[in-house]
Length: 398
Image (cartoon, rainbow, N blue to C red; front, side):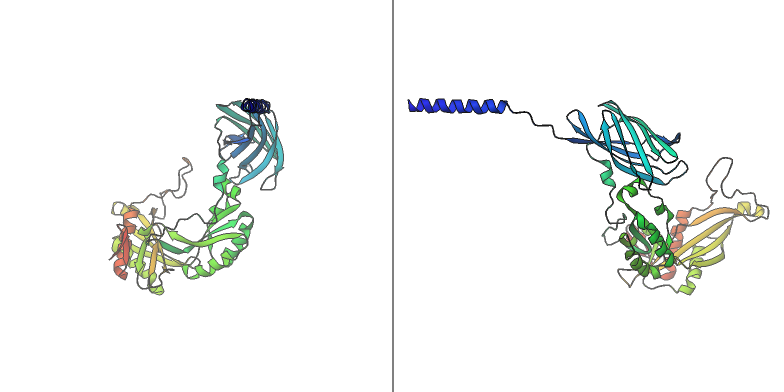
């Protein structure tokens, strides 16, 4: 009898617990974030390919509960310089709105509207800033589960790989620096004071640069002064990383066991080029004091056009440095060979510069196979200086 009573009590207890469980309210759905990348729009009515935006939508069930915008856009209709706005947006049904200050200090008002359905989403609206209106209009957007802007955050490295395979060669003529955008002007002052040359490409930030807050600057300098420049750059404000570059194309290198005489280097280059390319005559030579680069200019007669003064102008550029890892080695670095047809007649007939009627690129027609000529000059230099060239993935003595 006691057993029956106990069983009955247990059954009642379980039933009560089940009833209580059934009476609980379902938990709220977990918020999920989706990301809509977009790139189509116009500035002041002119289509622009420079718009790069991501709309973040936080969804709980079927309801959008929060939103944010990260968009890069032209600073004006005539500029390639980008500005960036990253702000939260207010959600009112399908309408998204907000305002904030861009990275460039502009006050921007945003009014966007979501359109379409799950499988065919769209976005339209405006970004209004002083003097300009940017219109967004794009359909067939694809929602992503991960934020595509997260991959644009740059590490402290400079982005140039230096594989540790025993064959990589450090290039002390190039310094790569990662610097906060706000400190680019400080870096320019440092490079100017040290006599370096800064690649201007790094001064026009891309959207990924604006999102990371850091730019990568490429600086060329005389290898004999590069260590001092590197130290100055590293000590500069806002610099998060600075290091020498790496030679990616070994075919432009000659490896030596002794440094060539600096006073004779131009004549050594001239002799090697004349040995490699028949018919060359040396016109001039000079040294760039900032980059340590020696330039030798040549002319070569073309038999087919000798009677009308058409010749070929060739420029060879090279410099020398000591290996920063193994001081018993030196390298000659050849720049890509420049060659073009020129008119030596007092009344030239060849186009120079742009062909305005067709909008073509600068006229750089050449009779010379510059790649083969470059290799021949490298072999001649290595032979003259008892050095080595890179071939078949190894150094070969000449």
